Length: 383
Length: 89
Ligand code: SF4
Ligand code: SF4
Image (cartoon, rainbow over the protein chains, first blue to last red):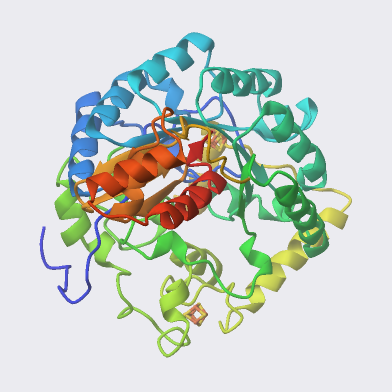
């Protein structure tokens, strides 16, 4: 595989590897970042394939490793992969809904060398958690959080924030404190994948954001030194985009369940990238030579206003997936940027979400499951 | 949080200190993050074994690098380390 590396851009090695072991998941979160048509990708890499991928990426310098999915616990070979990762010197993180986790498994993974477990909780009450997850799971998740702590892992609690739970911010923080979280990730929903499809029902108003942020900020000061808080900002209410992936092909490498290597976990939806598969190429070749990983490296690809913008080294033009989803052209500036000629689409989205709140006949959330995945696929590609 | 000069200092059980061949650097690894250390910081943290206190660490490193007057630098760095949760007492 040659020809896409122009040798002009300095290529830094990957540092973070996200191993999406499977798209299988017993939960149905309506903001899931998996592709809408995930049900079409049925093949999964074998244990040996994953071990090869881990070894190759580690050799290049990857050190932070996330096992995610779907629900990674559905893979029976998880302890074996964790063990392999530990032997290679990775710092590994299990990103789980907690579903299917019990004390024996927690101990087994610890022995295998897992460094930490990130448990996601959907809300601070059973009713809302179970509604959003599409599965009764709240009490079990709390138990898992306790067990994670008990067995000496740093406990990372992750709550995705959106309109249905944002009013619970105070309770969510109190719950994190009660569970003894060492790290709390408050992730405002990013509107790709399923969250994009459900945006009218998930996007909070600016007032809701500001109120929730103020509560989180005050709490952050209160627990300083005890709990670290990662706050993922809601970029719809910013006027500059985030520096997506710390720069395309500079730091992050995602491997999808079927072995497709992605520069960002939602890059699969971008047209014409020809994302390579680890069954065909080594990680080294993928990182250095592939079309996909060289696509947005550097700034040759930029159009105006980014091309002549003095902030382009800060945010690299923002998120290409967001530009594509909202403007139809992935070469455009991320429309979150107030300099983007398409910036108006953000206000339209905010207005549409507000109208949906007020509408008498609110349409239902589309839950992430195989049936809906097939329906969505059909709606996008009617034959 | 301030450092107690008398009590022994221990590297955090929930962080990992590791030499990275690809970066030719010692790093601290923790959930979602990594800090790259310069050589002197790495040397200090390697001494935090839960047995030695500040004075022990200073004399150990002064001996190792055949120098003196490291007390202030080491104690300032350990203060930072404590506040970042990298070490405990
Ligand atoms: S976001 Fe929810 S549905 Fe999607 S993989 Fe995670 S737990 Fe499963
Ligand atoms: S114009 Fe482009 S490069 Fe400049 S701040 Fe906006 S998104 Fe970033």
